[in-house]
Image (cartoon, rainbow, N blue to C red; front, side):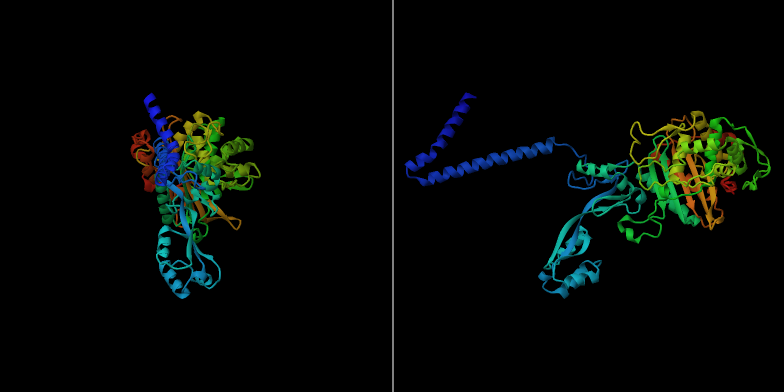
Length: 573
């Protein structure tokens, strides 16, 4: 390296004295050439460094993984995506259209041309701005194509200002779950509000924010829920699909729905998330909780007998069965025939302290602990006397949200643990509230009983070939002017599949509720169970649930009732 350093030192020394030689020889042109050479050399070094830095950043910098719509650090809110990375919500740059009338040459011509290029400009607003004397906004939220159309007019006084807007590219899909953010970038409902700070942090990190839902499951759920609601002439409808082991919500739908990009046009009541905010007396789906409590306490087993040969008298109140059998029933038969008499006798025998304890454990006395701020508290049970216990046993006297019911069913079908519902992919973090509700033996017994109810009881229309669906129907009349009105009813079906295998096996809950179906019959076995079967059938492949022969179907053979012969449920009527 010695010759190189000697050469470099000679060059620097020569440049150092070049100016002096030029002045001494009276040759100013050489002085200029030297100065130009020095400037070029300096700029060459600077640009060389910049080029090396850019190359290093491009080749060695962190990879973004090719995510759509992620711009680190320049967004207030990150994109929201489903569990598979599919886009649910994003920020897109729109433009505000401003006009300074003092710079408009021909205001009448400008009005005509702007209305032709952008018909949605309010004529009254445009006239007001053009007739004024200062620059004002005419219309916010222009898309890039709308901006280009107006810009092409080359009108004086017209200008644009960029503005970030939250858009929901899938329209009404998952709208109640995703929620909305305001124009200031603040979450105001749904996941946008529940995870507001985390969505902002994800934007700063250049990452999307991922939810637990699966858009494939969500699409099937919404499709089947809307079809069932229209078929049954329902006022409203609810649908939920969850992983009972992790509590992850894979799909959540409330019908009717609306387009979040045009919220002002939403029909009355469409913006309500009925899953978390609407309360219902749910009828016979509560018999699952009563029977589970009886088994878990040891007060009954599947062969315990209950006299349903006549009405159950409590004071001056007579409790009857909707489909009376007029005979003594085993606990299994009580469940399969949806006997109000049987579950009432069991609840009264257990007493108020036991029933209140199990309802508390199952989350039926508190708001569902899901991240959504809209999660509402249930109606308060004021007395736990025998008459109230009888009503509670078959789903009257207490109004809960569908989210509460789904979480409670999960606790009875995942081995006995209450796992809060969550919209986080992967479930809640370690150490989150996960408490034992019933024993593993009780959970296995309930899974078996729920499957029997679909094969031999009121849930036959929910069956899906090879998927071993289990569940319970429910129906309840609504209180109208202080009286239960059979023309205003709720029909529901709470299901799980597959219902066989160990308690730790992957299984999924499906809950469907029809609010005030307009056509008879209005029981859950008719208005909700068929939708559950179709949903399970369509989403099983997405969830990796294998179809296989069902031992119950094989053993029962011709004893299995055809779908058309299933009588529905007794659900409190």
